Image (tube, rainbow, N blue to C red; front, top):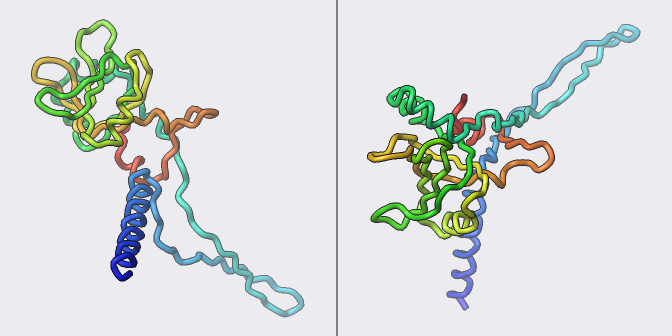
Length: 198
């Protein structure tokens, strides 16, 4: 009986930890409690002064990060124009790129999923390397050659032989709102800070 209770407690703690990490990963910032701002307005009415207080909670606005989206051709041309500058510009941010899936495979000598976006007029491509997790494997397995997708990755750099490689990639296509065609992120939140600006 005691072991069963301990097992239930462990399961509950693990469930809460996973849920919390999911919210943090999705860029939903948990804001610390902020003091209510008060506004004092003196009004006089027949020699009496009353104080009117209004309280407001400050919430960060939500912004559209879709304008930061690069095409595979734009990324390729940035690297062809000035390889060192492009590598430096994209080294500390998550580069969000759209394009058609040219191929789906794994990294040589590794089981990490690899998705290559087509660059028209070139035999090279923008190559996104995913961590080898069940979640990423399922997402990559759902893709088809020819699909138009949005993928974001870290540390954009030219490959040894061909293409541009990005690590720790994430498929972001499902984050686009269907009606307004936007990817919304909390202003100052995780995605706002991470996604490269144009």
